[in-house]
Length: 419
Length: 111
Image 1 (tube, one colour):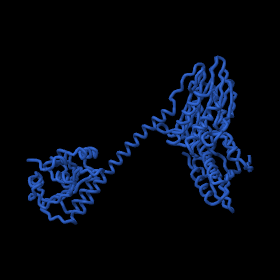
Image 2: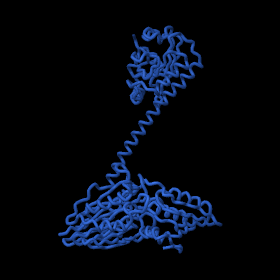
Image 3: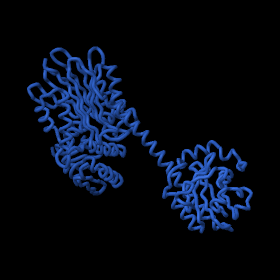
Image 4: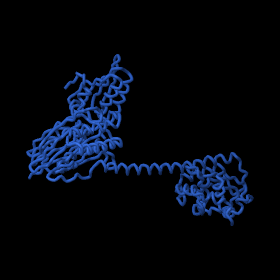
């Protein structure tokens, strides 16, 4: 039997790509389509109604109301009625298929007793013809224009179902990509481990709101700045989500770059303020931060700090005496020409400096915030190494708010080991 | 996330002065309501007062609200007056370096 369709229509690569993308070939029966074919058959008083998808060689019956469940669910393309709709892109209506030159030798006339056929194109979201939405009768029919209206409407509904699925898939893909991007950004934001600083015990602990996969507005780092000196920064973007994470990334890199150019902590903080302000008017996002430099010597560590309105670090002396270091300064990113606060402290053997973000002191459930007093008491009691101390601070804040923090919580500890 | 502990935000319009009064905690749970109240205040009058005498706690989100209100008021030509600053609020404004900016020409501290 020679093929009667124009080969270019069935084999059109764009159409075949749309057929593949729809993902309906060889898929199971689904209510979404079966409801439509059943309705079409009922409305049009026909025993069969089908939604078909046609690739280059076969017509797959995605839904086939009236056809026995254990019966065939496809025919070859060139032995199908559908091929003519696919080829023309137009509805096709035949009152007696035995009398029509396009269809008189189709097998289904004998096997299923087909006598009348009416179908409309089933369209992909991009307008390509995937197959047909059709009704089939076993007696000849004198189809009227009114008969075709429900077919057109239900066929369009089937097309919308396919389009909806494509949209959901593309939304899902976009979300998957966005989540991967978020993970990458977060990796860029948070050094998983701080570098080993010879002669000094350094550790950080962090708890992100909502666990992994969340973008964060807290940032911290420890890095060499040359000449045996080190820099450390801790900061907090007020705000959440992608915008806060972008600002946190910008702030951390601004500090890193400035630190390479200036040994003066206050200058680095001014640079941070200027960099954030250069983003343009952004009243909603600002940063509090402390930048410090330190040099480790055998008998101690000299730390210089410059602040931009950040929560005050806790200094813990070896004997358990604690104090808040009021570094001061003004939050960065809002005002021009701010003067950073400055502080200098020397860590002797066993002394520790605890830097943290406001998620620690603001942690609370229904009652009081964790606060500075509890933090001081906790640090005074905790006579461990840097990791133990940082871990205790984050854990205590988390415990205080019943395990469900509403803000990111970070702690960085510098501790001079006992010789 | 804990439930809204019931912060009250009231808008009081007298003459051309609109007062936004906060009682409770100025934080994430009521930030949107505070912003809304401020928008209303900016539309209703030409002088604005934020009364924080009933505020027992302010977090960074609350600070953000105050900075936003302050900036908007400057944009409109009259600085919002922040009054009734309790010790808890004063501590946060001091730490963030905002006291000099936000409380300038305010003399109603209860600290």
